[in-house]
Image 1 (cartoon, rainbow, N blue to C red):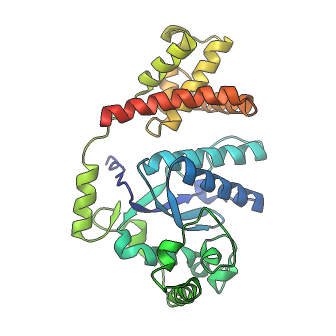
Image 2: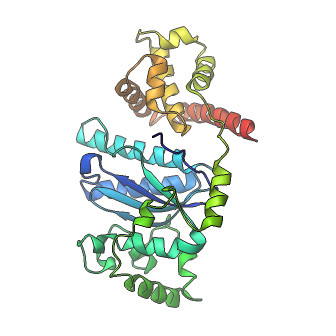
Image 3: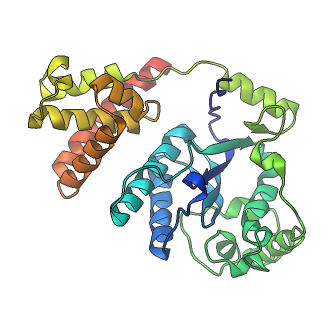
Length: 318
């Protein structure tokens, strides 16, 4: 059975889960966790989402993400791609880090935000790693209690439900979390209902399905390639040619990067279009990023191309 399409609800709250490929660890050192923090922080600015809760376990990740106008898929693809690239670079390896695509359940925030935050922050307790949630370093719980400062974590939306001052709200929040200590695995937060993509009452589900029912207009790899060919002043045949000519090689890497950044085109699609395997496309993107890391003018050119493409999509969908 084909997968149901993702539902993009502007302002929607999602329980996002990413799991290590084959159950393997996704965090090997504390530096990895801090790198993931950095990517989350950059994402809140770049993609306009909010993180209301998180928990970085050894081989999986939980996030409570509220997206903005930019679809969650674009932000999560960027996050997983960049973090995988970091691990593969440091470990000098290649391949997948995460198990398939991320899982996301669109949750009725009005009814479940507090419960979802508690559920995520109690994950280390349920797993037997700690007895109390504040003993676990790599979740948002300590920031809610004022024991850690994470500027990219949104805590006020939940805390204001428990008191009029910061002090009283933290006391109320902490007691609310402790009241859930005996809480077991809750299948509904993992997508176990009639529609595994959603958690809420009938009105909420109908609202989400009506918003998500229209087929989105998105870029195709051909449109991305046409834009790049115009910018590099080469034709499609030269772009797809088997030669390693520098201009064409760089243009292919840019096609791959822009396609991936659009959030709606897979590297497999890019590979099929360019007559390259996925590994070659991924490697070319990585080499491109390494080359331009310290070249602001090159980075600006890529951003300009990306802006032109995304503006095209916005105009089509308006």
